[in-house]
Length: 347
Image (cartoon, rainbow, N blue to C red):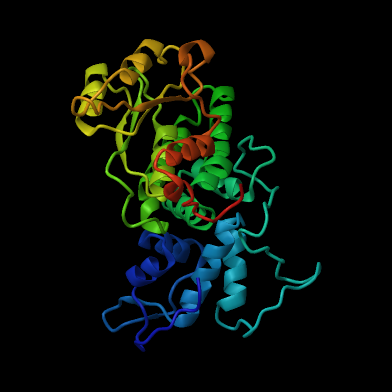
């Protein structure tokens, strides 16, 4: 985010600042209430108006928060750097100085620090900020952090290196704490699902998909865990691959009807557990044909998820993770789509 030019002497409204920074107005109001990162002036109608200095201060807050700095510390640095009385050009001080040296996000994987009491282990620093917000049940903060991570690192890196490790840490805490932390897991899962659906709004992606034949994504009948499948859909959309998402626990007849009506390039069947993975269903879908006589076509069936062991998957292709699945499915559209790498984040 660069400098913000304000043409109006009265400054910007909270909504305008939120749109520029890619955060919600609720998040800005929360930062003002908790940390004093709000506009210093109001209009005659008592509406909040943000000056260029005010905007620069919350820009710094966004940058530090996305790097995983604790919110209170990020706010202190933002106020010291851009608040009233701050020097015009702040220089990070040494060990005895007031300002910490903060590494810009995206230059390296930053590790260490607290994670709200969750057993995170050796993870990216962004996971710790996400974990603290989850434990506090701070939905606006979760929304802001998740979208910032997707924007800066791309969908695949955000999913594999930030979202999944944090979800697993919450799951471990849940298992070791009886019935506690269930609400944390549910809120975090919902916010991640929301961020995955909103990813196209914050990421540049091809305006026009190449071809009209989609990839159908469906959970196996009885399978309720759809979040990894949502991540795959978002990652495919990032490359311009057309999809049809059917979601959790898709009945057999509904899946077959969708395949016949859409004529997909591929059908992805997600199974979290062995009890929901069905080899006979995969083979039945693979045997479906459509098109005119003499030009019959079939879809590639791709079983994905830990429920598909070698026996259930049979001779179908298997993928080792999100990147592998995206690569396999993108390749079905030829070199042009396969080469549409988002070009951000680590691999």
